Length: 112
Length: 112
Image 1 (tube, rainbow over the protein chains, first blue to last red):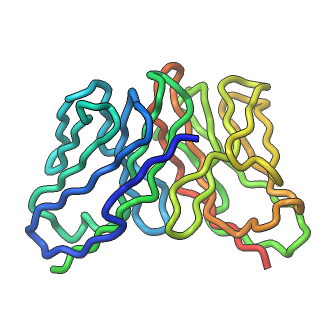
Image 2 (image 1 turned 60 degrees about the vertical axis):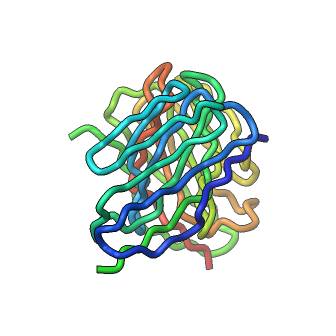
């Protein structure tokens, strides 16, 4: 089946630094989603991307749908302690499809 | 408030017992899903349902069963046939034709 490789697996950064993480797929995706999960909670949708090359922001978060349609990037600017959590990418091969493939997550730790 | 409610938050069961996890949504979403999450892993799809009285197996359906008698409800039963049931279970829903899934807060099941 489809696989998503998400990197890095974990990262430790100083408060105020910018963060970048990415997901790559072995096949073309038509939709990319980025979620954040706090410990013991369900994932919360951060950003949804629908077109190759699309760049979308949500506050300090910016995500891009790769031109090849096989990758996506999430950047967090000026990190703060509440950014701590696990960030998941998810993709769908068909627009409007009910089936999502999830990456294994990037665990972000922010040092005050 | 609109949302997805999972209950209970924590559940303990003895090995060999069946257990049912509740998921209710008032978002008027057509599709509902059950995912399993293990430490350091992405989300794996157990079952999904696009309409009432219909559901399909996901990637790891063995040892689980579901029902969809009402649009708002999609309970998951973890049967004694599931070899390794201890995990964090997440319910999600999405509206028709949309890929974005919205998650409940999860149920942590521990089988002893």
